[in-house]
Image 1: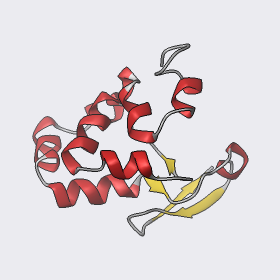
Image 2 (image 1 turned 45 degrees about the vertical axis):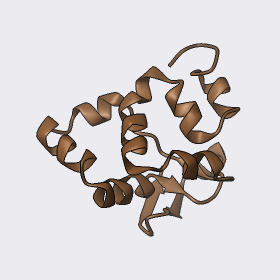
Image 3 (image 1 turned 120 degrees about the horizontal axis):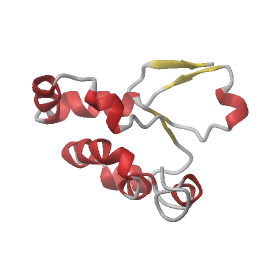
Length: 111
């Protein structure tokens, strides 16, 4: 993560979600997935959301054939991506120990 500027943590906090991710080189695979799913405008226009953004390193753990298959399947890709979004702005204190419903209607637990 860049120390300062648009792709830094401070810089990303000031931008809409998809724009912020596109400025961070560690999130380029996520940005590709968001574009493939057609979610750029949805995420950029959403207010008070929290995104659990997988980094390129996380995506690299998925076999290429599997990742390519998911990237080509808009419905599956949208389901996976919306599982990583919570419809409320969460504070660091809330993330210490909580359970949250995702936009995909699944539940995530943080500790």
